[in-house]
Length: 359
Image 1 (cartoon, rainbow, N blue to C red):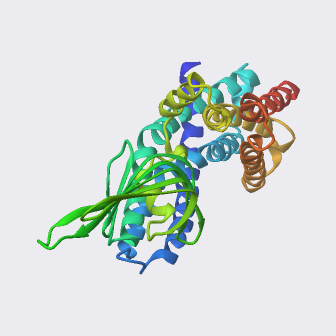
Image 2 (cartoon, rainbow, N blue to C red):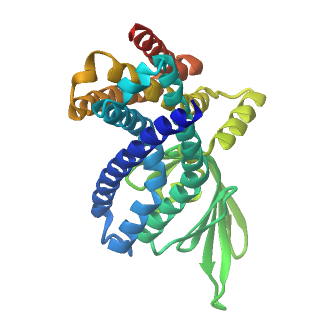
């Protein structure tokens, strides 16, 4: 039985590899086309676009792996059915459940591969891709730092303590420099704001604004509840230096959720991201098992093309339901566990019933 298990697993993994390569190539092509709109902006060129595309491959492969696993399992088992090998396996007394367990083991191997891609390779490579693209487009600026954000925009140095959302930042300091008579830069003003939000274009709204102006003879202060400031610093540039929540590995998400809970802060959106990623990864096992009733059931006489088409439809439908729930769960205040595990539970129920009905 171990030899048979290895044979079945090998067939499914081989076809999954082929499908992943095909889907990954297509996704990379679309990603490369997407970069073309930024080619020529600043110093961002065609080679940079190609590099960014390559750096995004692990993330794209990780996202496509569940769909590729289903299609690969359909093709692998379908290939065995076409050669009458599955008939021989059943005639030897091997149950459908045993074949389903072999498919589950193939899915477990893919889960481990996905963990390496999504948790080890993808986060740092995606962050580097974002930096390459942004710093190429804004080549006249420099940034440094990982714990916070430090930006140099001409005579201004901007410090941002944290990113609260895509266009919302907290703990803002702006140090305004001015050239003195000796030709050296001197501190001319210090601006402090509790938060900064991009309202339109390159206009920022600073909340709880306070400025200290360092004159030659005296120091003056200015205060305002809110004020508008124009700056060449864009939210895209800030995102290159900030930690992107979507790019955090599971360990980082877990620690951040724990931090939010410990401080009594809202953590629903982060919990949805955490549990959804775990559920999507484990659903790879269920999707591989779902291929079994397609091969032994009513579709056993259909061609590989039909099974592949059905697999694509099921995979895309599952992917869309997942993403829809993830995006709307926080808006409607749904439970993170329901949003993350609801589709996986439904998939498990469908798979169990489908396998049980196969004779």
